[in-house]
Length: 332
Image (cartoon, rainbow, N blue to C red; front, side, top):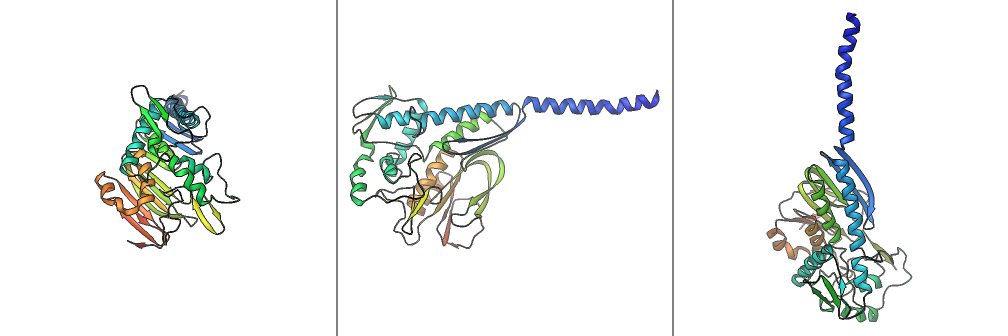
């Protein structure tokens, strides 16, 4: 009997440990999901109570946001507005209304940030539905010039009382591509609550302290790395959606001329990474800094945000975040 009692006594903690492990697994204290939303890879990691349930809620959230904000979903709020004829009010949801208000404010402060430039995005074949790595031609100057009048805020009128938007020109279209992923990451983080990493196509939001690597815009590795501590980050680059035609690189970020940003510059910006508190603003600022560069240093720092601006030969750091530069570039 004593040997048997010894075996029983040893088995009790093992059984308790097994039960505790099973309870932890069933309670969903750790979860990781991978999926595709907004035409990009999305990864959610949560290590806290109810993680599995929260991860499912986040996937439903991202699915809902994509169904409302994507230009590629036929019955999304964005698609309905884009397809509407002039003079016909279109009712939109709260998410659209908030992104419209934020985007318009940024555009009014900095016209280069233009959510209304989608007609030209389509012309250049950079929209998700038309993008090709091997275009047969690029737009003629006359075609670009003819669409520029459509790419203005005054073509849209938003009524905050009724959440309706009316176009003054039926050909006008908009797109929240420079802000939607960050907005989605912020909402996903709210659902996750604590101990999470949200990654929506490289736009990150986390309450942890993690190491982040910045993809090399031209090489096969990483251009830089930094520590993200309870915050957000987003990167815009000319390597994300581009094509090469007759030896010239054309990227999806268009400037006020209607042409790809930096097209005729000697040493153009090719990547911008922004670090700060809110993912939607990191997302927007990465595009804005890609277009305007270090001229926005003071404004970026006044917001409490940091940035790494890369050209092929140089790098420029804005703000307090320390970036470890991993490729040969000269500081400016």
